[in-house]
Length: 191
Image 1: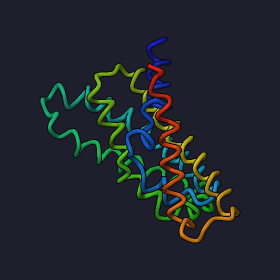
Image 2: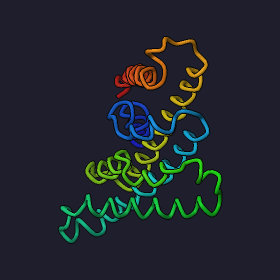
Image 3: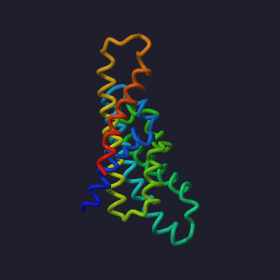
Image 4: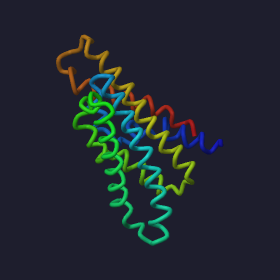
């Protein structure tokens, strides 16, 4: 149980995929201009990332390793991720058209989100058990969502701030992301 807690804390804070490993920066910078789309993107990515990592773990250990096809891992994982994203998009289109429209182009881009593929590859490569893989995927997804929501809240506050013209828009967003990354670097001593 303690091992699972360490895996969760490690994926959530210490090795956060956005701020420590710099994966998933496209939606991090693109969707976080306001809180609602960032929350929706975080939840959709959480769902896709968790399901894709579990499916990839099962396929890797039940199919690829026994058949000696580990070299097909990346291709198979991309196909699994694309399938999970398509099912998620179909579900959101029917269940919540407004949410589907607000996510726009970013929902299909989850397929090419390097954080999702990175988590699937790490789950397969670390040799985690199925419960460990589930906790790792959930921690990574929760860390992604946490960072998305924090950054969107900060960016909303910065919209009303009196900033020099040179810092308005993308420059202040990049400076803020750098400061958040330094803040999360403080969790590195928690191991």
